[in-house]
Length: 593
Image (cartoon, rainbow, N blue to C red; front, side, top):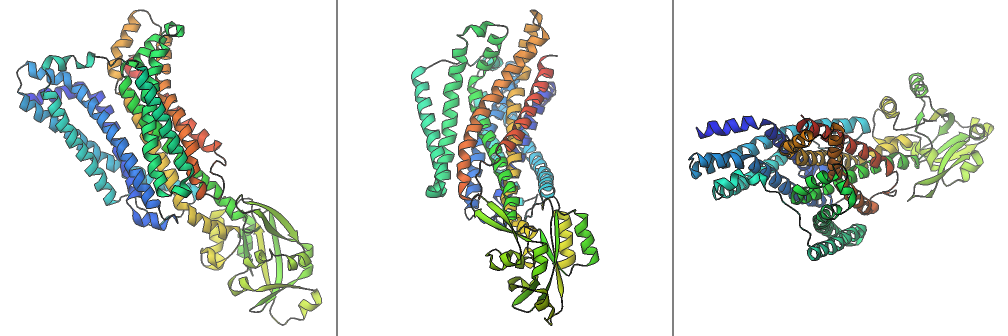
């Protein structure tokens, strides 16, 4: 009988359970996606040259575990709030507390295990989809990456099941010791914020100092090394929570004292925010950290991606050089519509390559002269034979040769002297396309056809350098973009779960406003403002964290980590706005029936 009553309650509140399940599934899916990288040591070692990347991921796992603890704690409190009234009714009709306790514990554990298993499967599917999109669209080269990684699945299952075991015991003790009447009226007791100036001032001061220490440690990572990441992790998380806890409560109380709070439904919006103020501060702190992690990871990933063509371009002015290109290979070059094409005839010994000076006078050879290697700035120099013979950059011509000729010395002869050489004449064809990355598929096909390999050590030019740099940075680029997308999904899950979990309880308040004559436009405006606050506040904090946090990457990025920062910020702002619009649309459908 008790089980039937519990199932009836579950069917009655299926929408709330759907919100709960979807939130927990996304949480466990994202945790699995992170652990699929963090626990795969072969992947980390083979795809990055940074020795401490494994320890950095361990710090990331700690941070994500903290976020997961708070998230599951909130999800459990939501589950508890849904069932308090039902269990109170069971007690009133004579059900034994021991039976109710068993039911509570089993229900909590069943919800947790089911959501975790489904989440791991969803995480595996997301890992496959996201990785393939990134690898194909960005042309990445990865080693030892796998979407299904058993240690990651075990770590996710153990953490979530362990947390839900603890949560089930907590629910059992909490509900069985609470009087039935209190359970029936538990959801009718608002958590009204109280302004305590002294306490809040201390929280603000400690929060600002903590965040300042975290920013300083990230900027001085070269000195502090791994300890700097640990300091930043503790201080920034602590400071973010303290500032939200102090400032958000103060804002809600202070704003009600202004005259604009009495205009329209502003007072109602502020009261809605105040109603669950304590839960909001915890969740908004998590969202701010996830916002910073997602935006920071995407920004760094795109930063590494933008570095690759810049570093490839400083190596050589030409994409590739072919010795004795066939007719089919010339057709492949022509199909790429190159900006520059030149053919130079030569005769070679093991140590010297002889060119006709007249050909270089007619078709000057372009070399790259680097001004500042750290900033990747360079000049292009057009050389005739005489200039090229004396230039210290003439090695760039020899890079485009193949085999033993690449290390030979170039010598430029007159037509008469060249004709007297007994060696057979050969041809060197060099060309430049408008973009190496855009033509990487065609260049790869050409390299396979001519050199019978795509190993960059076997040929020179921009494309060879692109392959080398892409091999170095692909792992870091993939980690940044992959984790950025994962954290963005968890950010959306946290915000939408927090907002939608209270939608059913808010429904009767909006019905009351509708009955007293409030227009649909005013109700929509109130919803837009309320949810906008929950999106804007963590967004501002997250952006500030990212701007200071990028200082960490000065030691591993050739260019400035702030170069081209507007693009990832703009993309992220668009996605964040999309999440906001989706959230208010779903929320309206629930509360404005």
